[in-house]
Length: 95
Image 1 (cartoon, rainbow, N blue to C red):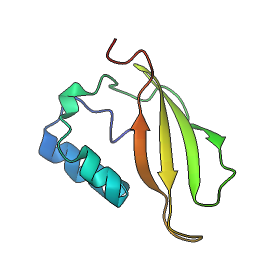
Image 2: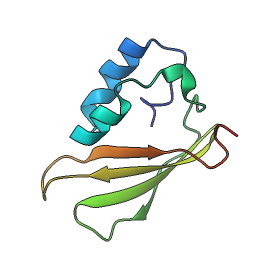
Image 3: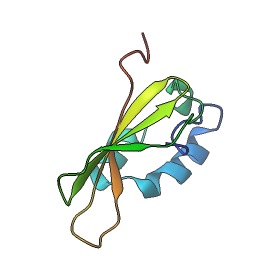
């Protein structure tokens, strides 16, 4: 989330930092995001795992100055790296 919530940098810099953290589908989904459109500018506390019942998917809530984002991570198998599948913004973001 620290790499994601940086609306003051260029898209090229943002993408260079965020792309290695994403799974294949998220890489397609977020490729053209403009960082200026992201309402969060900083993480305001530690993330909290909210669901880790699956060995392949985990949900983490991360507080930011725009509200709490839910981050969905997945991996292809045990021992594989966790990659971000989705950044789910707080309901109040963009309202």
